[in-house]
Length: 400
Image 1 (cartoon, one colour):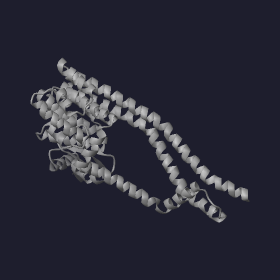
Image 2: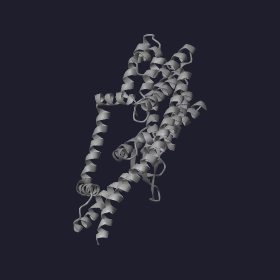
Image 3: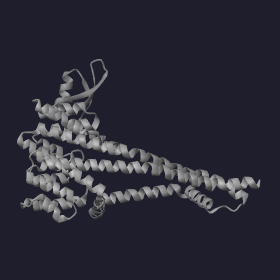
Image 4: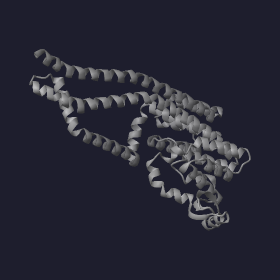
C-alpha cells in the first residue's frame, strides 16, 4: 500500500506532519480530514524522494546505505517465525532512514502489486547483486525464502568483514603516503621559492641538488595546480575508459589475472559464491553463471561463461578449466577431488577459505614491508632536502 507524507493543520491551527498509508492520494486526503486535520501538503513518499534524488546521488551511494546483511537477516528471521513478507518489508521500511527505508517500501509496494520478491529486488540493480537475486528466485519456487535470506546475510557479513580487514591493513600506509606527498609538495611549492631569494642575493655557485630543488619549487609554484588538475583528469579518464570500454577492461583484467594475489582473490570470491549457490540447491551450470556475476574481472567472466557452456554438455568442471590453461594446479586438483567425492560445494567452500587466508596473509606481508619502506623513503627525501638547502646556507654563513 502506498505511503504518503503530509503536512497539515490541526483544529488549533498548529502545523503537523507525518506519514499515512492509503490506497490513493484522494483516500489519504479524506483520511486526514476525518482526523480533524486540514492538509497543506500531501505527497507520495516515492515522489518526494524522486525530487531529492539529484543531491542524494552526490552523497553516499545508495548501495552503501542499504545494509543487505542486516536487512536479509531480519527478513529471514521474520519469515521463518511465521511473519508475512509484506509485513516484514513494511517494518524494514519504517526502521530504515531516508532513501534506504524508501527502497524497502518500494519493494513492498511492488510485492503488493502482484510482482514477485525477486523481480522487485531486480529493479534495484545497484543495490542487490544479480547472484543473490538468482538464489532468491530458486528459494521462492522451493518455499525456502527465509532460510536462503539468512544464508545470504551470513555470507554477506563474512564478505564485509574480510573487506574491512583489508581496508584497515591498507589504511596506515595510505595515510603515511598522502601526508608525505603533501609535505613534499608544500616544501617544494612554498618553502623553496622563499629560500631561492636568499641564494640569488648571495650570488654564490649552488650545487646541482640545490638547483634541482629550486627549479622544481619554481615550477610547482607556477604550474602545481594545473598539474594536479591534469593528473586528476587523466585518472578519471582512465577509470571511465576501464569501466565503459569492454575491450580496455578485458585487456587490463587479463594482465591483472597473471598476478597471483589478484588471481587468488578472484578465485576465492568465485568459489565462495559457487559453493553458496550449490548448497542452496541451484544446478552447477546455473550456479556458475550466477557466481561469475559477482566477480568484477571481465577476463574471468568470459572464461567462465565458456566453461559453463561446456559443463552444460556433460563435461567435468575440473577438466574444462584445465583445458583453459590459466588455473593453478592445486585449484584443479581440489575441484576434481570434490567432484569424485560428490561434495563439490564443500570442497569449494574450503578452497574459498584457503585462498582468502592466503590473500589476507599476502596483503599483510606486503603492508608490513611497505610501511617501513615508506618511512625510509620519506626520511631519505627529507635528508635530501636538508642537504640541498642547509649546505649552501652553511657555506653562505662561513663566507660572512
